[in-house]
Image (tube, rainbow, N blue to C red; front, side, top):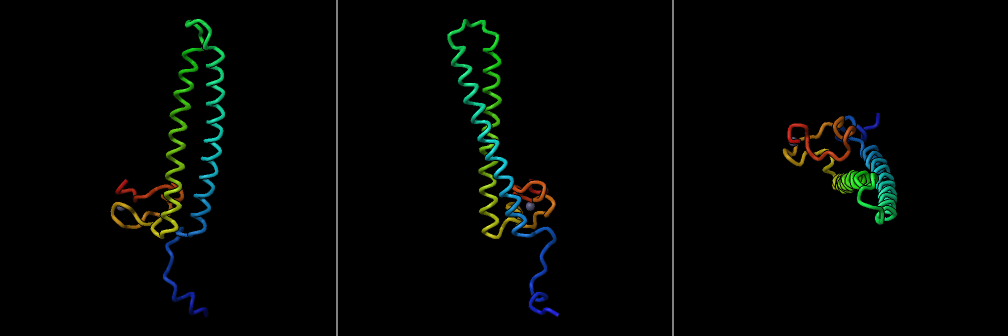
Length: 126
Ligand SMILES: [Zn+2]
């Protein structure tokens, strides 16, 4: 019998620190790759806009480029927020409050954090 192990407080299932850290790290890598791809697309759209800037105003590409830029701008904004949320999740994990709801100080269900590693509240407080 390993008495030291028995003396440890029982861990809630799914509240594995390293598994959570790995999920955050992976989500961060994905978001960073997406941010990079969006930046490249943005540069491409800006280049295309520069090329057509001297065309007359009836250029059929005009509205498309404006629309594309707006889509890219919105997506980049979302990814930036996601990266900030992931940094915050990482800090919460290091501070030992990752599984604690910011609203009611109750536990955040492990399944919720598996599905959404940046969650900071339980479902009731969301
Ligand atoms: Zn709560």
